[in-house]
Structure formats: structure tokens, C-alpha cells
Image (cartoon, rainbow, N blue to C red; front, side):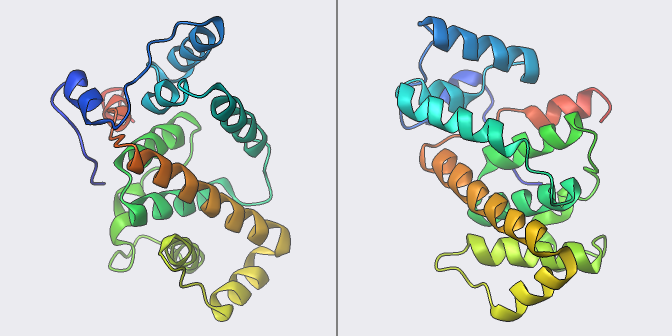
Length: 197
């Protein structure tokens, strides 16, 4: 998996297009504490959204609700998110996605192959269709076809297909937000590798 990294935290922070806010308010400190507890460090994108409390609260609230979506197989959901992030070339999202997969006990063995899924032989036919759909949704303009949608609808069912579409749309928002702000890999994947994952 290709991710943009910098030699130092300072270099990574300098690449961000808005200053990363040091947590000052009680809410900011609570967010920083939550990040450290769950991820081992404060997320750079959390430090960015501290500039706008309304955006921060809305994003965090929505992400919490997304955690409850359960119609789509979690491994397919992960592949779809990673395909979207890879298409948009968001190294922060690819890095963090690997970490989340590892932390949730999902199958992260195929993630290295996502950017080159068309040439890879590790994916099942269903996974390939999900990757194709996520990639097509993440292009500008989108390249989703009726045939793609119909095959996935019949294979996954309407509820899971709608969730797939929503999660790819959400990953488009995440990846475009992070990439546009200059956020890059924070080293989450390396943390997994160091811990034997």
C-alpha cells in the first residue's frame, strides 16, 4: 500500500494546509484524550476540525452513527473504503483504514493489493465487483453503470447495496477532505506491523 510519509512529525504537520490546533478547550482536550486512548495518538484531521466546532461536532456525530451500519459485510465495507481512498490517492485514509481493519480484527491481508486490484488474484468475484463499484463511484465524473449496480444489488441485496453506496460516498468525503487539506500518513500501518499485525 503506497502512503505518503514524512521523516518527522514536524515535516508532516508543515505539509498540512491549515495549522494543526493544539487542544485548548475542554471539548478539544476530550477529543484529544479519546484519540490517544483509541488510536495511540491525536488524529491530524481531528486537530484540523478543531478550527470549526460545528464541523467537528457534525462530523463526529455522523461517524458515530455510521458505526451502527451493519447490512454490509465488514470486510466488503473495508475493501470499498480502501478502494475509494486509493482512487482519490489519500494516503492518510489508506494508512488509517489499515489500522482500523487491524484493530477491528478484519482481514487486512488483501489491503496491500487494493491499489492494483485489477491485476491481483487475491480477490473473490464479489470483492472484485465491490472494488470496481467503489472505484467507479470515486472517479470524477462517476463511472457507475446500470449493469454494475444491478449485479451488486442482486448479489448483496438492496439494504447492503444502499449501505455500500453510502459508505463509498462517505469515504469520498473523508478522502477528499483529508487530501485537500494536505493530510498524509500518520504511521498507523507501521504501528500495526510493529505489533505483529
